[in-house]
Image 1 (tube, rainbow, N blue to C red):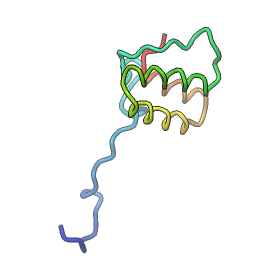
Image 2: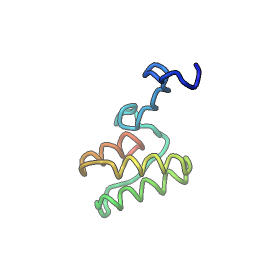
Image 3: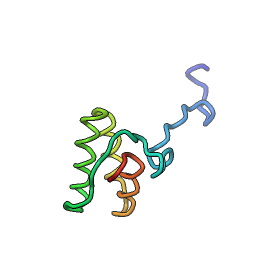
Image 4: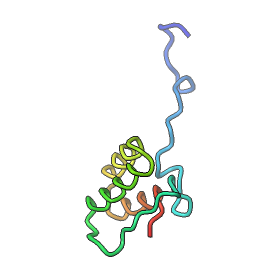
Length: 91
């Protein structure tokens, strides 16, 4: 393809699936990562922080960046809880 050819949708690279599209509560993205969310503050920022700390320790910074970006894009508390459950094992 030359530099003057228009880019068509078929030429564009496929977007990588988001956490919410690719994984389920029964089969989260990081099933080996377990996070306890019960018995503490249920504030959304606290929950995001708890998951981020464990992801950084168990997986690495790239996973934290992807999770926190998706978490702050959530439109509701319920959507955030669903994202957390699709990302890690919650207990």
